[in-house]
Amino acid sequence: MTTRPTAPVPSGPPLPSEPPVPSGSPGASEPFAPAPEDVRAYLRRIDAERPDRADAEALRDLHLRHLRTVPFENLSIHFGEDIVLEEKALLDKVIGAHRGGFCYEVNTAFAVLLRGLGYRVSLLQARVFGPEGKPGIPYDHMALLVETADGERLLADVGFGDHSHFPLRYEDRGDQADPGGVFRLVDTAEGDVDVLRDGKPQYRVELRPRHLADFAAGAWYHRTSPDSHFPRSLVCSLLTEEGRITLSDRKLITRAKGERDERTLDGEDAVRGAYRDLFGIELDALPVVRGGIPDSNPR
Image 1 (cartoon, rainbow, N blue to C red):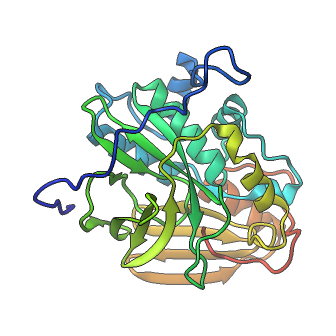
Image 2: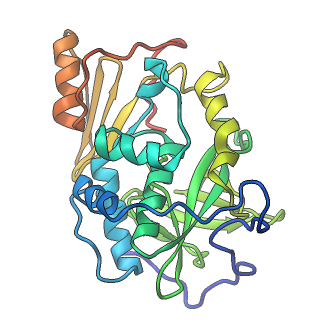
């Protein structure tokens, strides 16, 4: 169960669901609308029924199902594949190829699904806090601000690896209990919002809605920079009912009911079998870490 404050904390003016683009200007367009068959296929992909209403309870269910079926993974980087930030291509990757992705990919795909179900969604850029407690580069991460049919706003994120299982109530500035920890949204002096987990800052969200193309530089940085851990790490991670499974190169980490088990898989067939049986990913060849020592961090 989650805890609620006695009254909502004001959090600034309402946010538009899409960044405004002047009519007739280059790039002016309506938000990408998925085809009905794509929405149906996506719901099958995450083992979900189409909700009757685009409300908060349905969003919670979709969010959890997404985390349990679509892995957080960066295999494309280590296959030498481009990270294509285009909605239809990302739908094809998640639905058709039965893959996952990192934040820009899976959060964009989830946003498309939610819009197809009647939610209003903004793409928000965020900066992840590093070990020294300082936020990273702009467009380091993508999160979603989702508005329900009832006008409730929630911060959704299916692309941060080990994080909250359910969306966070955006207007709530008190503790929000979640199976993944105790979360809190904290307003900064600059007008941004810090997302805290168990008292530790995770990332800082800028509240101005962004276009998908705005994240291209961040995606390029995380695909190519030696300062990013993604080129140095190979990770495929999925939430489970009892904990989490993570495959990093040949190392399989299972967390269940508070216990942690780690073992090294023996041979390529065993690794391919783990991708197939645990994550639903069929691979003809295995990815190779391109930037250094494997790292099992699921973010």
